[in-house]
Amino acid sequence: MNKSALVICIVILVASVEHRVDATVVRLLTDFIQNNVAGIPLIHKTEEYDFDPEISQKRRELYYELHGYRGEKVIERLGLGIDGKHHERLAFQRQRDEGHLQGLNYLQP
Image 1 (cartoon, rainbow, N blue to C red):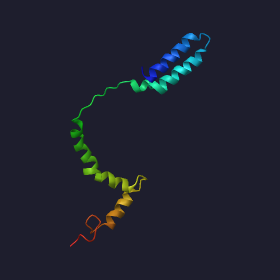
Image 2 (image 1 turned 30 degrees about the vertical axis):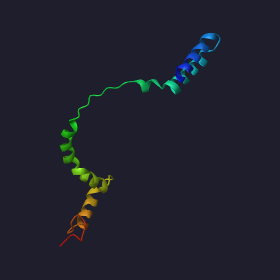
Image 3 (image 1 turned 135 degrees about the vertical axis):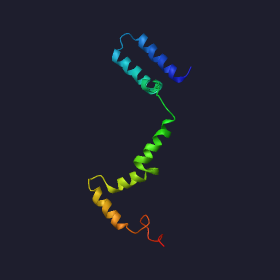
Image 4 (image 1 turned 90 degrees about the vertical axis):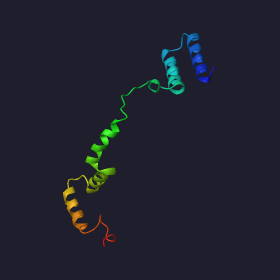
C-alpha cells in the first residue's frame, strides 16, 4: 500500500470513529489530502483538441505575405514604434540610408 492510500485510510478511519468531529475539520483534512497528496481535480481532467498538422503549411504563405521571410517586416515595424510617428521615422531612416547597401558603406564598390 502506498503512502497516499495509507493517509487517506487513516483520515477515513478517524472520521468514522469520531462522530463528534466537526464536519469542517473533516472537510479541511480531506481537502488538504486531496490537494497535496492526490493532486487537484483539474490535474486529472483530460482534454481533447482538434489538431490539423497540415495547417502550418497553409498558414506559412500568409505569414510571409504579412510579416516577410523570418519576420523581417515585423522587425522593421517594431523599430518604427507604435506612437503614431512611424511615418516620420521611416522617412528619416530612408533619407539616412540612401545610397547605402542595407545601411552599410563598406560593401559598395
